Image 1 (tube, rainbow, N blue to C red):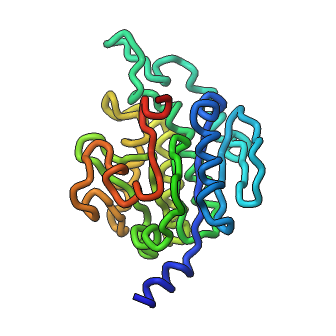
Image 2: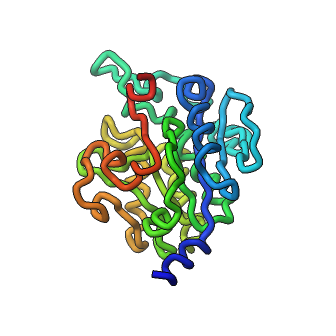
Length: 252
């Protein structure tokens, strides 16, 4: 047990999130405040922002203007202004969120930039609608993100990856290739070739992982028994220190 604990403590951790002004006003500000309150001061939160100028200044918060550090994302977004790329379904006569590839691309490109630029052993991505309510269990986070694993996720049988919580190993030999593959899905237009209702990041992240079947990956749906197949975080050990306010929960 002592060797396991020492191993986990020797591994460094970073956290990342992203938001625009609307999301910051709804929940993102509270997310950053909860990180400041509960996380150890030696662990950094990397915030990838749009529109919402940084206002919470702490030594362990690092801000990145998303379009400035990922100009290829901005160019891609500017080329996809038609409503069909933002979720419009002509056959249904309405916007469908799972078809909004442009919206969800921002989360993916925030993570790929951090994967390429992180010196940490463990990178935890938390959606901006995550609130921390206790000090995180760093030993547990190390346990579920092994040094020989590429990434950690909940692969839900029907809905695919729960992308409000994701972990990466930036020091994995194929970490940079993993980042490249995720960006390629968007920049090449592959995202638009998927069947309808498959443009959200829960699908693109899962499809991207399928290119790395030769790498160990940690699926928490199988690692933890009995987690909810639709919303697994509240029924996992993560709930001991974080709450993911999915959907209407963030405004209630």
